[in-house]
Length: 383
Ligand SMILES: *Cc1c(COP(=O)(O)O)cnc(C)c1O
Image (cartoon, rainbow, N blue to C red; front, side):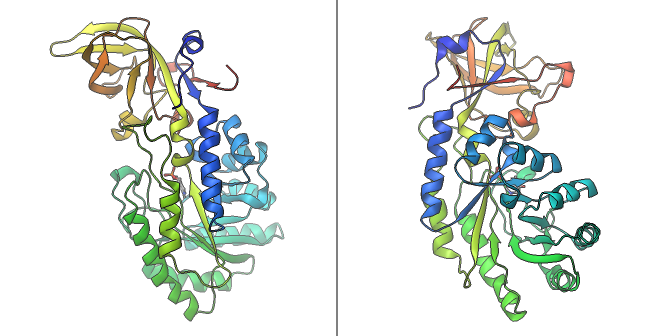
């Protein structure tokens, strides 16, 4: 059980993100141990949390970094990742971002279209470099998750559709400054039903026939990320079942000789180690419910407002009888609500509240909307 140092946290100015570094270490150790069983390669998806201390800690486990912008590439290098362990994905890479990737000899660009291939080839030629690329293929696999975070369907903007693949491969073989190293997939996020990953494996197996036919076998099969965490019960499930997750790929993915399997895990690495801490400003009696107005808002954690995401909310200090509250922030938007009709022990002004499982897509999405101050970060090993 991972506990909160409540007395110490009570002295810190709220709102802020609290990171349990022990839980992060334990999670990283399990991932390393389970992935090593099959010699799988892990890249951490930086967009989930680009906090420098977290990046530095993840780097010490020997994982690579999966980036979706030039600045994420630079942040990864700054945190100690070597260029040869950085991959760069994204539908809209700007020229200057491509240059950053080439200058730092990154492991691979995950490419999503023919026009992008042509631009990378052109820039690489100018710089006398060869760009290593993996093709991001849209596998048309439906992941049972929120519509804003499913990415592997034909109607999504992501990836190369299956019927275009031969044309894209022709192009890859024709361009002089491009080296084809792999194929890449990412079907969505917060996926808890492993059957979606099994379907992805089956689709990849079918696809491999095309590469065999063309005698151009990709060395890297990058299956992306997407493994979900348990938002309802973070104490009982502080870590996803990585053993079962990797086992699906071992069981269902049929590899050709010399092929490597790469993963890009984001949320499952950092989601549970982060908590947003906030204090109650006011209790306001409504018509049907009471509002607990807290000093954190959607500018600090936008997931509930953006995709109706659920986060468990706890009062860390009250032990009184339970009542129901709508827990809301101070921002001038009705969607600035962390939870409706939440059962909490009787709550008063000044109580310390924890919004759990906020380590992924939390701090990194914070904004200054309403000209608020960006939330600070506090680490369990520094407090
Ligand atoms: C967001 C993203 C990931 C990480 O997804 P998680 O659900 O956080 O594991 C991996 N790969 C790509 C290409 C992504 O865009």
